[in-house]
Image 1 (tube, rainbow, N blue to C red):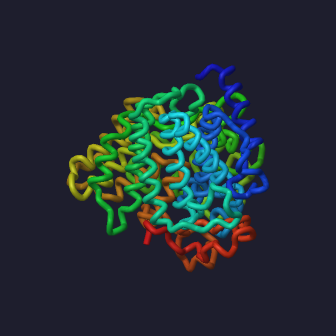
Image 2 (image 1 turned 30 degrees about the vertical axis):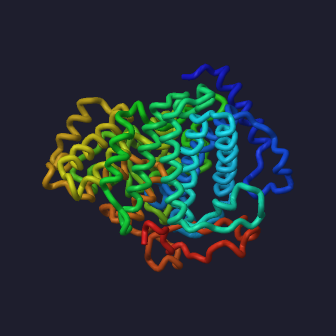
Image 3 (image 1 turned 90 degrees about the vertical axis):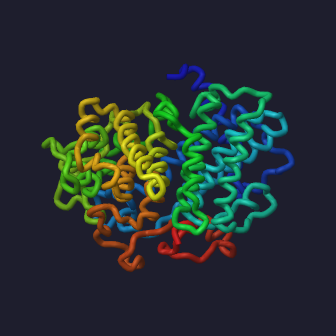
Length: 470
């Protein structure tokens, strides 16, 4: 673990930055010609920290949609896919993107090309997540303080920008930088080689999202993947510390204190316990807790816990596991995810490569969770898992990726591309009637935007699809 005193210093600088930072175009009363001059080191600390939290924030919204989690209460809005106000989440994304804009500008002025590249990579990450959740969003007028009512940019054009940012970052990482990134980077601690792999891996992710469009080229995905992460040590993640727990750990702790959340969907339990598929997955015991009776029993999305008590009769997230360790990481992108990206991209053109990548994705996720090696070998030897090159289906790839991206917002992107066609996945009970017996396709625009920028906010429903999901 990094030196705690350094962490405290860096967090203090980040908190000072947060206190002084403006929230994108919201805080327009501050004179843009006299900004509080945060150093690039403090900016990067805050940006790596908040970008990681944004992954958590997005995942906490989508994990019920993809039936990793379920609410213990019947008819919960998150379970039944009712519109909710995500003004806070929207503000968090735009706040960090505003800081990234400052970081890139200042870094370019200083010749600190590696800082600029890190900023471009994280702008691509945050912008990509915003587009994936909402579609058309402000960007071109979002950060120059010229208007309080910025225009909304076309979501397909914004994807072009995401990929351009990643290409620029990859180039800039290869240049000499006047300032060296160090412990102010909470993701890689200044390891530029890993940043380059991360940028290429993100490029593969966002290119894959376009698999249902006319311009999709799997060769481009495979080329980016080949330049990406090569093992679990390359995972993009941020470990937490005593001053700030992993937020998923906090969900588990809160649940123990009857602030209910983090209950596990029946869909997830039955996908791993031998009900939906022939083999019991050894990862189950390392990802979720048992009931007081030592069983794995989930909650049906939308139905709630029924007559079960508040604790002990259903499986939940519990403290101390990989995803819920207080000092453990929130995962931004993993080597395991990249192997499943490769498997999907290669599926139609190079089936042996797809099969090898599929198996490696499973192995990498199991090793990340510290599944005992004999259990890894046994699971991979099961004929329902290692079915052979010829028998591999795209459903197999999506199923295993759905497990490996537990609690991650990327799962919702996959679910929409896959038309939610996971085995035994059904619409939640008490579904929002406005969805006409269909799964949700996007988030509603937040109330803060509707009230402040209503003339520019697109008119959409929860069934209107993001451009790559038409």
